[in-house]
Image (cartoon, rainbow over all chains, first blue to last red; front, side, top):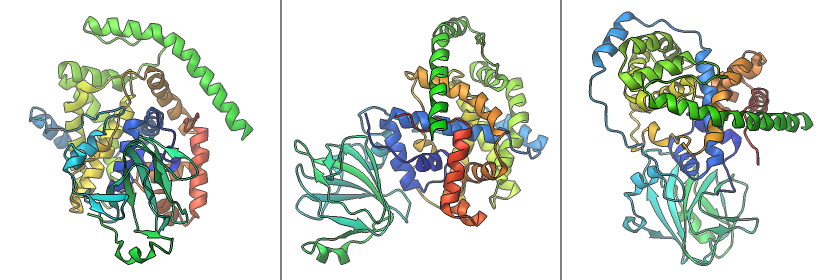
Length: 216
Length: 226
């Protein structure tokens, strides 16, 4: 059961449909792990429904109704939305990665860290999977912007707490952290960035000019 | 702070009490479904539009669909036009899309899980998001529907609360102070982020967030019960 959740603000923006697609996908992936947040999301959508019912109606022509009635027997478009819940990989991620982490192209950043970039169509947000070798450390870094992280496999610790599958972590630009993967298995996380990360330690600072946002 | 936690306690005990009654009612509802008709268990407020959706889903009832259309289509159109630059023609297109989805998905509607308004809001929100992306030629492999994670059937406690919550939220909505109602409308009906709402209303982001928080408290939406 997830212990770290998106803020209420984020959950509301998700329920209202106003998050950019990469961030929405990360929050949705958390929801598929987390009953608590599904419950809140459902209440927030209930609020949306109540607001919809209080809108001032705008008249719709009879022709539109006729049009819709005439199209009722059209075949329904195919839908993919059979989401998996629980500990399995969220269905929406399976669609993005074609089922299997092993099929992905991993780029090595440091000895302990590899990255695989996924495309969500959102060019303002990098949407990537990180693989941290078990026990491996990501050098201390900050971000020019915000970072969402969702643990998918394994786990990591950042000195403050440890994080396990389903846990959602939001870090703003001021947060400095150096995550260390827990022992036992590689840690795979989904991260959504709106600015590239910046290593802060002198040993790794030379990498910074090479760190660009890969958003597609 | 003390007032908030007090409200929360009352809330939880209400849910607990309702929960006990509900177990029996659910049994009745099930037997009702088994015999081919959906009955509204006693002690619940009847939701005309939920019944309507059930009829559409069960028997492809066009008369019910027409009734549902006449009520919701003008609201969906208002939703489409709220705060956006969507043309009237696109708003009509959105109404058609949403209503066709209603017809196609009605058999999956479960009145035990959600109010009709919550269900159709979710469809309308997703269709609107997809339509905006289409209009902006924004290409993504993820449809808004893919990012909608529904409550599970095995969460009856939650679900019950959600459904009852709908009536209560509707009642309480009318009592919100205008400044809070305005921000919720920006966020939900116009699809603005909190910072966009702040910019448009020329308010600090912190003010927007605290108004949202106050509104949520007044509406007794339970954001956190950890």
